[in-house]
Image 1: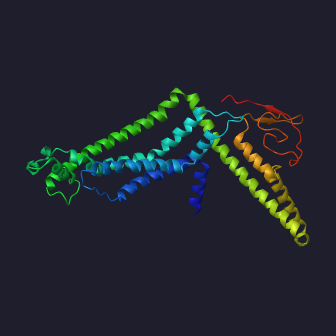
Image 2: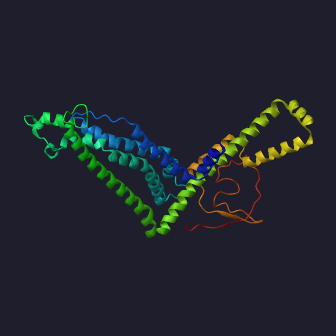
Image 3: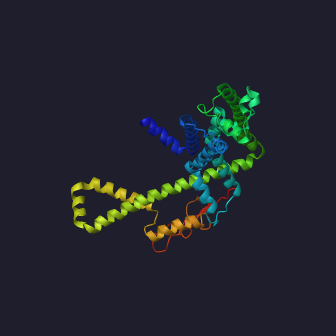
Length: 351
């Protein structure tokens, strides 16, 4: 269990490895589902083609959409696309890079399904058996005297072993169509491999600077969202802890004093340290309205990507990445504590 826990923690910390693992699991699941799937061709001219092609395409579309659903970056992409511009402009190249990255991973499982289906050849045989020329496979006398509708019905029965009487013709026709299906499968694999090579190897060679920039800022958006969520969780935990402590202190003051009397000085010192730690994690936001405004401002007006360098003494430059009074972060005057004014040096990123 410890090994699995360590592996899960590693995958959570490494988003790219986690998503590659998900794609691999989906690819194996698609191959396993096909092996467990019981293929049953209807052996009717009206439905053979629809069933065979539908078995090839519809599960592929389902696996493709499932890849988008299981990818956590889809929500990051949607949030970045729909968020208000505010003080931070939106770069379309970063959005395209994120979308292409998600799409590439989502195409792995559908590609495996299509490859396995074509290599097996049953769906291809069911879809195109009515287009066969029986003269190529031996005795043509079985087709004499039959109308066009009866010929189609006879050809549609080739995939069904129990319904087609002439087994020699059926075996020859099945091998012929499966050979074509396997050739299409290998051509499909070759095209997908070549496309993946061109995307991953050649594109960075021509636009390396732009590629590095889009890759860096797409990672930044993902990491920023995770750290913001973690900060909100820590704040909510400290907020709830302080709120509950204040509630019990107000309700049962005598029990609180009795508890301090019995526990001794060391326990009191530890509790004071815990309280100070919780107070620090609150970051000066102690009211519900203040927190709501902080969250609203984070969504509508994210701070610009220009960091401040802290120095000793002086004043604070409130124009970059928030200000000392908390106006950019949505803090309401009256609820925030006094902040020591400091001097900031601003550095603008040229990336």
